[in-house]
Each structure stands twice: as C-alpha cells, then as structure tokens.
Length: 249
Image 1 (cartoon, helix red, strand yellow):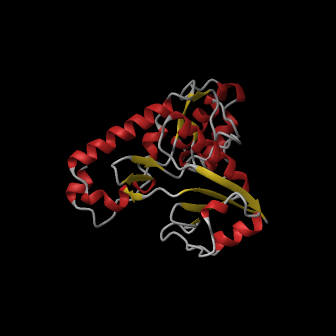
Image 2 (cartoon, helix red, strand yellow; image 1 turned 90 degrees about the horizontal axis):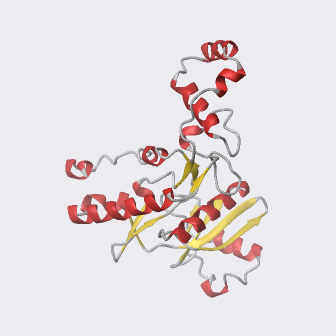
C-alpha cells in the first residue's frame, strides 16, 4: 500500500497524483492489474474503452441488491484507465473451498442462486456489454468477432457456425452455397438476453467474515443467452490439491 495515500483525500487528488499513488502500491499476488491502494481500497487497470462497461455493470448489480464492490472513482490518464473501488474484506472461494463445511457450501449456493435470479430479472433484446454493447463473452470471441449489440439471429448463426466448423476451406465453401436470406432463417437461441456476470468462477466469489457472498470482477458482464452463466462456471481449472470431497461439492 502506498504510504502517502489517504483514503479521505481520494476525491481531491489530481489524476496525476492518484496515478502516482496507484503505481506506488503493491500489486495483487495473482492479478497484476490490481493494485492494493489501502486497507479499504484497491485500484484496477483497464484499457480505456472497457472501463465504462465494467462500471455500469457493477452499478447495475448493486442497484439490484447484489453484493458487489462500490466504485469510488475512475480516471483515464495518459492512455491508461484505472478504477478505484471498495476492497472487499474476505477470501475467495478458490482460497477457502477445501475448508468449507457442507452447511456453508449450501448457504453459499443459495446466495449465489438468489443473485443469478436477480440478474435474470433484467433483460435486453440485443446482446453485449451495458455501455458499448461489445460482445466480450469467452464463448463469442473469434478473429472477426460479433458486432456490438448483436441480435438473437447473429448469436444463433455464430454458434451454429462454430458447432459445425471443421476447417476454413469447408467453411468458406459452405458460406458460398448459403444465401444471405437462408442465414436469416436460422432460429434464434433466445428472443431476449439476460444480464449475466459471465465469470462466476471461485476466484470471483468472495466470502466475508459474516458469511455473506460478494461477486467481484464484472469485466465481462453483459446481456447474453441465459445458459451462458452456466457455461461461465466452467471457466475454472480445479486446483490439483483439492481432495475428492472438495471436488464433489
């Protein structure tokens, strides 16, 4: 933590001063983009075009009643963007999973289920992040990418393409044989998309000292097909030191 930084002066520091304090702070052990600014605050580095999406998603989650970090200040300075936010006091499920009881596991599962239901109460007719509309999904990225605020037909065609993909040559040949109108006749994956955290891996689930669950890291949040949240749970490699009991839970 930066020895000269004072929480109560956060809103009064100039952008240059705040960036100096951030860069003078130690980095998180496993997430180099995160700086431990103080006991109660941390700062995370972003590419400037992406920070607004994260901020809007985090604020939307908090309005729904989901426990997420409070955004304190954002700045864009000399080509870099930083978000200063509340530092949640607790441990990630990745860190403590092997020590949790069955009772606590069920309690956490019920809290997470409630949060997901709250997210699904918010829907959209187009996919993508909340500010720019970019499709930042792990499951919708390729060399060309999807357009911002994609329609259900776009998502359906994208998924069908990759499910049937065998080689570039065959894909190009098939594309020439299918008319544009035929492509539009593909049944959409869903008529509406739901608000999705999109990275509900144990590293992004924090349990505080009172047993309350917090969801952090809203970088990939946006509107996507309902099953994408389930898929995001698989974006996690089980640690080798987890025993059978931990894996079964």
